[in-house]
Image 1 (tube, rainbow, N blue to C red):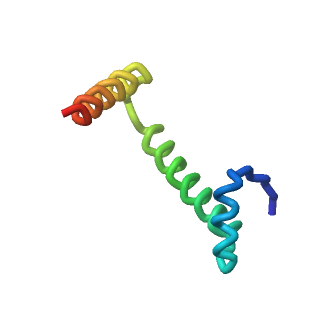
Image 2: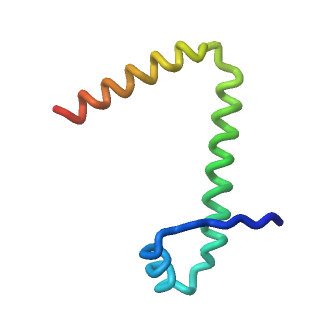
Length: 73
């Protein structure tokens, strides 16, 4: 198994120490695994897409604009 080093703010570390019963490395390992699985699924879906990068950028811009408009109402 490979090891990684993770930097976290001191305040967060102090709060984590209040929960010494938690295996924090397992929490991080599961979180990373879920994220990678989600990215793998997104890549699989995207690989079958007929949209171009330009199409995706246009859709993204429209969604962001509409979200921004919704927040300002």
